[in-house]
Length: 256
Image (cartoon, rainbow, N blue to C red; front, side):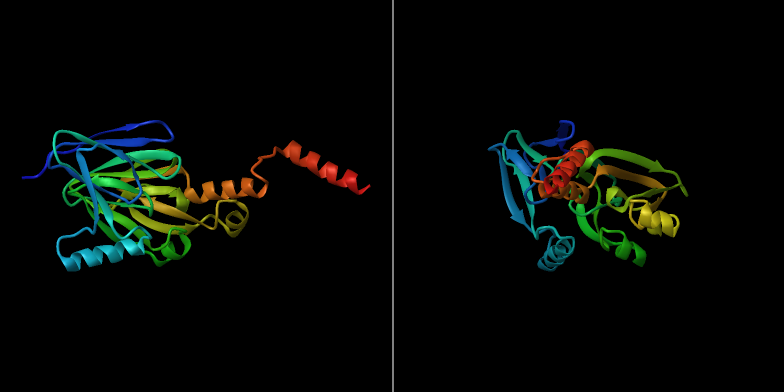
């Protein structure tokens, strides 16, 4: 007999936490390092996913391809009621994706937080060769197949889209959090050559065509790292344009 669905709530605004309540027999698995806390009644262990040895080895190889740790961390309630808290690695949002039996959802690498035990993890290769070369996210996406809930994380705020059949949106490649397996994913040149070179948005855009849902994030990890690196280069102090001009004036006056 299958365990009943888990109870959960997401708290916070841009530094969100997922709080999962477990009863005896309920179990969730999570990406290593995402747990914030747990109660004493919840046992945890790291193990490979899959039933047999061969399936576990294949699962570990797939996770290695996505750059994730080789093992999942499993949390199981032993008695009474237990609780586990999870959070992402940088400021952003959490989203629960409900999957029906056989339904799949694809997510960018590093998006996975945790999932119910009925959800299976796999690797999806981007169909178009150009998407892998020019998309900035590589050939590989994480694929989750129901039944069950899977929780994902992304940067900044989330903007959801429910695309109708044939409806298309173009998105900065790194801003895609995830999408249904029914959504077609491709990479196209960002307008003309002049726009691609001088537009400041990169040479290529991801094209998503419905039907299906997709989730877009407003802050990518790459942008966050770039901005933090810029501030670090300037000694951690962010200067306004006027301050920067003032600094140039000081340099020229010192040369006189």
